Length: 199
Image 1: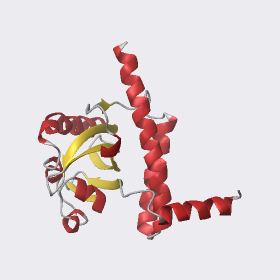
Image 2: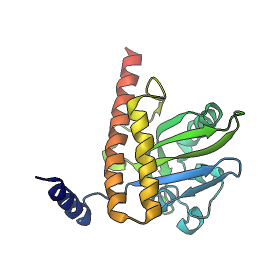
Image 3: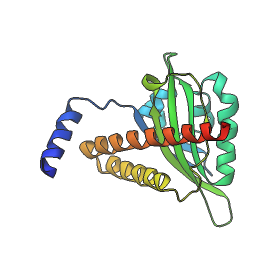
Image 4: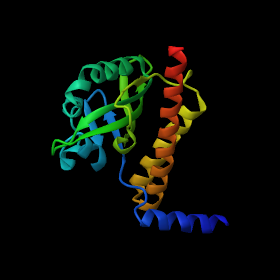
């Protein structure tokens, strides 16, 4: 099958809603303490989508984290903000209707030349349907910040943001498919690393 045939097949699959709305993105202006998210992230954290697009403080999103996970997720976010690193974690959120969802969050934090936190952006993947054991984890970056998979994730996030800005729904869905698979790979590698450390 040639490239056009593959794209046509992918377009049909996407048109048939094979890929559900399970991936959302966020962008955090840290000095202003304003997080801007899409509807997917807003829904997962019980936030009104109209308010999410205009920016809300991080505390509003932290209140949407399941009470049993708030105690470790908040401190982990603050440690990552301080270190200007990569954030990868699985935890539960509470939707507006009270439903509990499992998410995989992945993002990167950036500092200025003087070490002050400036910005963070990333994705949230709803993994509820694939969650089996009920455990959660905090995953450190894969060995080094220049790890190939970490760079791939950063580029995928940037591409997704650009497609959303361009208003290209087909390319946005393709980026979501790619991000979903990269997220799965990150989760598998983090799990393998946890098992290796336990041995």
